[in-house]
Length: 407
Image (cartoon, rainbow, N blue to C red; front, side, top):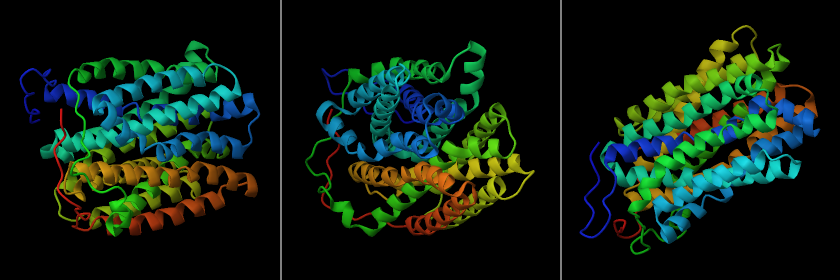
């Protein structure tokens, strides 16, 4: 990795590039366990708190809604306090959110969920911008590692939440609280980054709202939102689908973990393949087709669930990697990348929040999984179309000169 430029005289030196890369990966690994870790114990939460399927859907959708509604806070915090301190604050809030969510009352469950959602919203927006700024020559590699870390964190959360809770004799409260330890490790590793603070300046940045009139920006946003909708819907409800098909809860949790584990491959390879081509339409078509086969295997065909979740996990994480790579490839510079990231994640995650809720509501209304399956297929089809459009070799419109971040 190419090291960042030396700090000016009298300024604290920035950490070596390899350390910044490691810290980014550790922070990224905390962007999903707080959300995915709920799915394996969702049945326990429903039974303990007497939640309907619709209310449980709201619980799983709430952090994703926070990702969207609170994404604009990321750039604001970065300009006010610096990217490094903004991310440190997000990690502190994440740790507090874990504690509040597991403290007992139902209101604390929802309040803590909002806190972890707010913290992850900031990380979601600022990490891609940080990669664009500090690793402009290694965008594919770092985006692959970043996406792999997100998927890897989800894999751990899906696979070991229930076994660890059972081994330690924990109820769902304790099972969710365990993940605060993971966040503390990332927090401690990020602390050295705040010795040197970089604040993006408003001078020369894209005009506020400039990208909202750009068709390509909306295509990237649509792909980001629809792949996220599908991902969080599957992550939230896959164990319940499998339990209804005869799997015991532990096996269903491991299947969710297998989905995420398979995704590590797609998450790592897709960004690197994408950055080697001027256009990525063929890659989008392949990823969409594989995801469709996975959905059919999970919902409509018995006996091939293992193969189906491997296909689905690989394709969904590849789609996530592509959506993050599009932010870098379709932006002419770091400032436009930050704005495109904020737009894509703000709108995209608000759209994605409808996924877990819609699946839960359709399950309650119909008493089966056929209509949720149809919904996810329709979403996948529209996602594929938006991805093909976003994959064209074009840039969002440049709106003025851009100044480099100031330390």
